Image 1: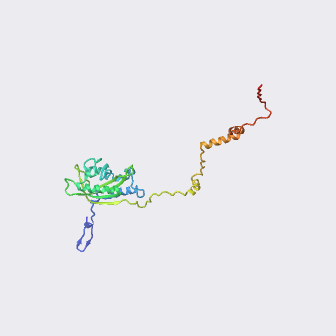
Image 2: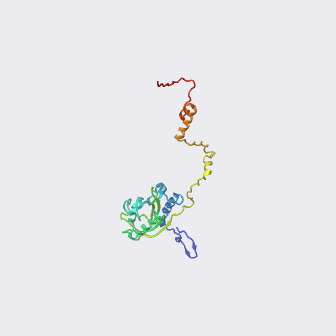
Image 3: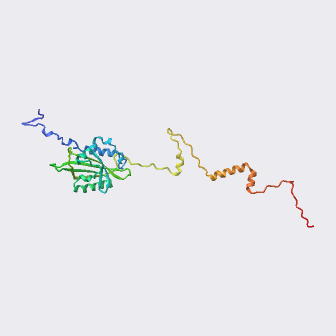
Amino acid sequence: MMFGSRSGTEATTGQDKVVSMNHFRKGGTRSPLRQAEAYWTALRRGDDVPSRSQIDPRGLENILSNTFILERIAPGIARFRLAGSLINEMAGMEVRGMPVTAFFTTEARKQLSAAMEHMFETPAIVELELQIEAPRQRTPREARMLLLPLRSDLGDISRVLGVLVADESTASSTSQRFSISSIEMRAVGKAPGSAGFKAKPRPAAKDERRDVNHPNPGFAETQARFQPERSLIEEAKALLERSRAGRPAATAEASGAAPAKPKGAAHLRLVVSRD
């Protein structure tokens, strides 16, 4: 069956409107990269970088085979902490614990190390255009890699959320190497549509007492104020004053005054004779 239109004496069969399906093969589109970057951006708070603990595999369920996590172990060197099945298939082995530069050519390793150092220090987003070079491969195939910086549990930027996509399935029993065609680095700026955290200014000293116990209708009642606690010396003085008020005789005796002699009381008289 032919679909087309007749124009004059020429018949068109619609071949000029055929859409190539090469871009829709497994791993052939950039959608996994954009999906990972959108997920990473959604985790940001203001202009900060997300932490490794915020990454949830359920948020990247559709692209887990293309996803990996890197850990910075030295300047320009990062090793795989986690890796999807696609990365293991392309390497022909389990890549966990191996440096990411081991899968690049000698010349590309220097470029990747410099790009990763820029990513950690700036921080920045790094996107790489790669060429897959295999020993039994006739022509090199294209691939793309996205590196997104993350914070560790200590707060330093030493983790990476990475995504790798290729033109087609590249499962092989032999290790494959990458060469770098181009590197795009974008500094991490403020997340769009999000405001940075700002602390609420504290009230002035003269207004602080007035507002410290101000009632908030509908939430809580006014709380009673705490009275200042007296020291032990003040309590001892108050106890002494109460005891003095209850016993005036004891107060006079404590003050050192001699008691008055009662009138008409008996007494002894000493008489001395020198006869």
